[in-house]
Image 1 (cartoon, rainbow, N blue to C red):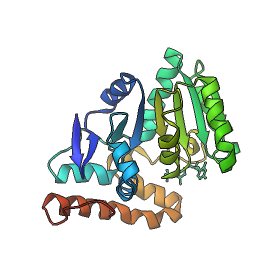
Image 2 (tube, helix red, strand yellow):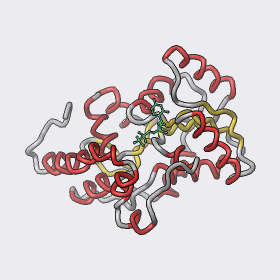
Image 3 (cartoon, helix red, strand yellow):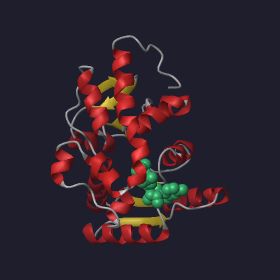
Image 4 (cartoon, helix red, strand yellow):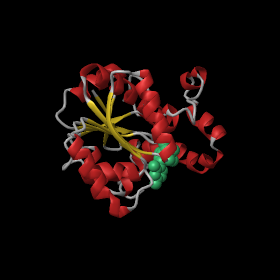
Length: 245
Ligand code: UDP
């Protein structure tokens, strides 16, 4: 069920199996394991330990992760995109009556995102939403609101590592069963950004499309080859300790 990449347990079955696994847990956070998130996790033991704990599941979301898994002989069945997992969890929430809370993105985007999700899944119960540009002193109020609303699923889009940090800090005290940091997914649901065309998704070129649409991302692209190189060096024994890379 899991491939081992640099000590991370990466879910290696398909998306349907992942969703089954998530719904079978009492409390779980789904981490989009792209090279950037995994490298960030290695710089901070708090992230690394939590990501590998029983309450977290890492999905191979990114060509860098999929390629690395293959290179070290522990292939994953498929790339699992975080946004597709979110979409499937929303569909199931609408069907089963799970309450959903959305936290993140700008005020306009989060309003539009919530509206579009309701149009797509008319029976969904979005019990609350809030933009992601809040002050530190507002955090307690947000956490209290999610508690009061008894949300079952919490999707957080604050960019990485802020969104993972928020979930790590508050997951224990919150009542939700499913937690998921979702990066730019609210922008996509709101229609501000589009996903790459299918052909690019199939060829593993989503990263290229994102850089084309948002050129500021070019600086972050180096993380993909860096990650693959670290995985290979670790596998052949040249790089033994992968902490603080
Ligand atoms: N965002 C936010 N608060 C912040 C920083 C970012 O709500 O303080 C939102 C931003 O508006 C966007 C989302 O976080 O909707 C994801 O940002 P980004 O695309 O940088 O994340 P990535 O997917 O690259 O991790």
